[in-house]
Length: 338
Image (cartoon, rainbow, N blue to C red; front, side):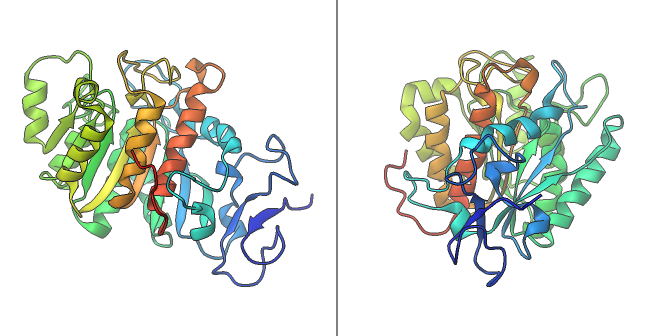
């Protein structure tokens, strides 16, 4: 089987030799239809096709930590398949992320589907190995449990990081059925372990019922402010962006996006849907504004394809990952931001 032609800024498309500093881009859609060939993220090269890389896109097919509908273990494959439609130039931010950085699809971090503690260790170990070479990761989950080992790996390099957490839910609860490690507890554990900056972390898009007022008290004690969906409805996207930036400042930032931050009309394929969420347009606008921040790594989680319709959630997850990569890209004019 011949290799597929990848785009490159140097020499003919498909060149994989020569200057290793020149990024190899996605498969050339003008020569190979988007529906042909293996589904790497955005049709980018695999890890074994490059000699160096700046950002690794990696899947974590794990959903043993869910409390309601399972299936997010199939999220990485679904997002990759949906990412075939992505194009290399982001006109809103005026950047070409795959030309400015070597971005690769690093495959999946394999982890136990049975024992959560073992899986967390394996995910942390896999993230450490990739960050030994890459400057940043964009991780596709998987359920939100995976944020804890990813934050452990990132904090090992940067110290406590500011967290911008997009989600319908707080994910700072204590235990479920006595279990400390679930998709509803990662940011409580991360705060307790000293992985997050308690003066600079924020939830965005939270909404819906809680167990009681103590949930909010605990959340503030653990170091989070909140820009809720009612806040965004009242103050608009511009108001949300202003509050996020004021909270974060110039600190190193980890961005975590639970796809259920979107209204189920925009992302039905998720495990714990909550009505009244953000639109895709609102979420992408806020993500684009983050290019002013020092993003050190990011994730998009909780895509559960069994509940999706016409790939709506898959496309949303792919575009979230693309905007995160674009926000990490140096240069650009960021015209039309917000």
